[in-house]
Length: 96
Image 1 (tube, rainbow, N blue to C red):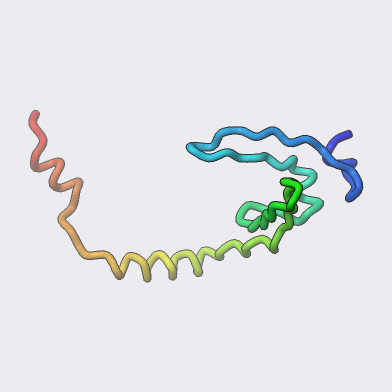
Image 2: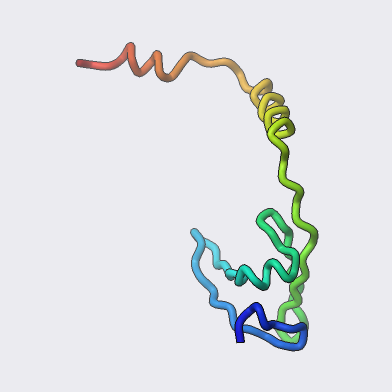
């Protein structure tokens, strides 16, 4: 039985892998689509008294449009102090 055939009464085994210093579980793409989970979604995990986990999915975050992303980037850049050009510093300090 694959994730495509999974019904609410069924269960599948998922492997745990390492992701940096953390552990991660991969969801099969078909299951993620069925549940409406996309990159940026928030999953809520609640440990039950019997050490089982209850997992629920919140709605996926809406991706930013190019205009929204640019507006946020410009706002963030405006908070940063101006510094000397790193490229200019490297060229001036280069030894040939």
